[in-house]
Image (cartoon, rainbow, N blue to C red):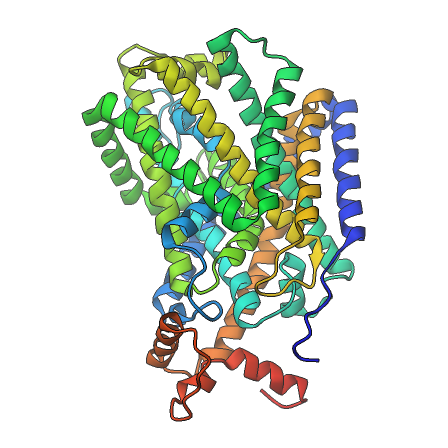
Length: 551
């Protein structure tokens, strides 16, 4: 009986309710568009004003906690047995693409312009000082704090799934493990429903923004009309790549897509660096990093008590809530691909790998954009305000050698980027609606294909009905607030489990066990090796509990 695998099945109740709520919401946004816009504005102001301090503290403390955890003895704990399934490079590529959408390419050229026009730290708008700090703020909002939020959500779920061997790869499953509320009960389904709605909203925003950017640049290149039909064709093309990747599985699909995208983006950035104003890009990127590093605490805790607090509300708090809204989905995907990794590896790979990757790409693209603004080639802030960001991107890329070819390559990377991101989100959504998953198990290909279709229909419905995208963005941000509580519950559970399982085990024994499991997958047990039993405390605790013993 012990070796019997639990029944794996789709939670049709959860799936049906989530789809019903999503499509009713889209219809409501389309019918009551003006009313929804006004309501969204009020809700956004309320959420970002009332929760400014808690959100800033949450992000700041996430960095401290994760780094302390990584460099403590608990950082040596390995997630499951055996060697890592994926190479370090492929692993990092996959979770980076699970955490950022294709719209990052859009913001990579334009983010600085917003901070130039509406700077933080009390700086004068459109001043030399505001320009100086513009890329630095972009680095800050895409850096260590953001990835620490992801790491905080990921480590606890990884531990629950791989070490504690708790069944189910969903938020509800870890909430059940920590609190006792059943994953299939009211509380569990409510948690998963919030997650699904948030994932649908976040992915729709990314997909629609990418489709709009793609079709506008395509229209500039070819003259093809920028119509609803064009946008639908683009979305369907992306979805076909996404569906194929999802259907063939992680090894043949997501792994290859993520490698293609990351190498493509890096090579594209290198091209801009080499054939653009190289010296300026390097100097400005380094200066921006220095400004971000030296002002990190100020940026993290800046509430603007003497001013109106508008910058903090509309930028820093907004960004942290956006990252928080994605955190549970990233955590599910990271858990899937992180078997065999230590807690320290997961945290450092996310915070360092994720941050450095974005800093390099953003540093090159944004510095290139700033250079052309300073020298009067492209007035990025003005074009952004009057014509749209995609027009500014098109003009910037046209300045490069083989500019038209670069635009085509940019569009190609954007499509594959979006498909890879959708694949990661699709996996998280499918896993949430699949009950009973254990380590080594994945949702069925048919279930993943079904959710591919659903995730495609929602953005098409949004574009067709002309539902206001900003309203869905607000809804996604509001949904992030309960996720703060959920992540804190996860973290409480993690701390509790670490104390129960490993507090009495010396650091060197944890490290020894992790090393031995990496070097060999043999099941041979040496009775003289005292670390064999004591370093599987989670299993012993569970067996003890099941027998009615005292842990």
